[in-house]
Image (cartoon, rainbow, N blue to C red; front, side, top):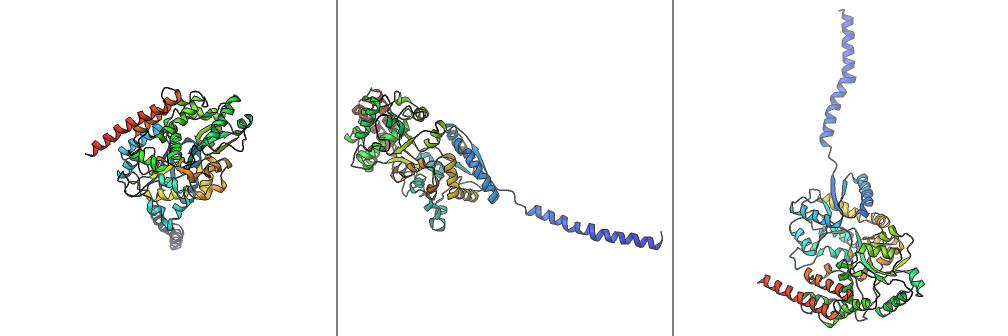
Length: 448
């Protein structure tokens, strides 16, 4: 090979090295370093049981991923009974997700907290001078709160985030009231006028009152509304403590309200064994003028009869001595797994989910009351009628003590017996008191 040819080859090699090989020496280590520093996308798992919120939640989680890069995977397990069993099994196996809705009595809720399955969110709620806490309905938060010296021995704090709120009230069909000669814009406000309205509806061959009283929690709700109205909160609490008997005249007065409705035949036939879904269908299909149901019914009725014209009112007062209160508080609440490796990310997502824009979206899509008070101006009008009475709410979980399940069962079964005519109010009251006395004796024996 001649010298000139050798020089040409060397020149080509130098050019190749400078423009091809040399840059690769920098690119390859750079790529390796980028891969080394790349963090996997954070993934949060969320469990719930509410099919009506599934699509709305998924829409919001996609938006959240676009904003933050954090993926929130929603997993639906329905119906609620199956979901509750899944939660219990996952708790025993310490296999709960990062975020989950909880179904269960306050004592089970407390047991989950003490087992480390639910994180204390109090400090996060108070972040930035309490800005998160102040945006949410106070009584909705209280459903997930344990106060100092509570009977369960749980450290005081807030252990859940309400995503929406609810309350249970009376509903009335405006068209049916008008057909019976009643004012659809002025529903009855007291028990006397309520009975008179039901009797007028009966004369017009219009069914009067319906509720899913085959589901005993709805009977319990209705009865305690009137217990608070007739005897006041403190006497109800004293009854639970065993200081006031269930055969007290005030409790007998509560039972007599059910007896009056039944004896005057103002209730829909079969109400004592009727499921709430059947009751909702009757009211939605305009087969009944009054219903006792919760704010979730707005979405239910919309699906059954979009043209249903109805209003919301407080249950009519039976006494002027105490105000009428209604059951309410958190509807869907989410808890953060106390053992979650993604605890901070889970809490950040729940905080974002309860901000105004997300709350308005959920209210419009699912027709449930938002938990963020700043969102109320942008919700459907019928929901506003429920929201207006959020200051009137109470709930068994808001009381300092809770009644035993057996005593509550005796109370609700006794009322069902009154409705079908096999017990008098006095007999039902005596039966409940007998069960209560047994429960108190058992409780005292367990403490010895």
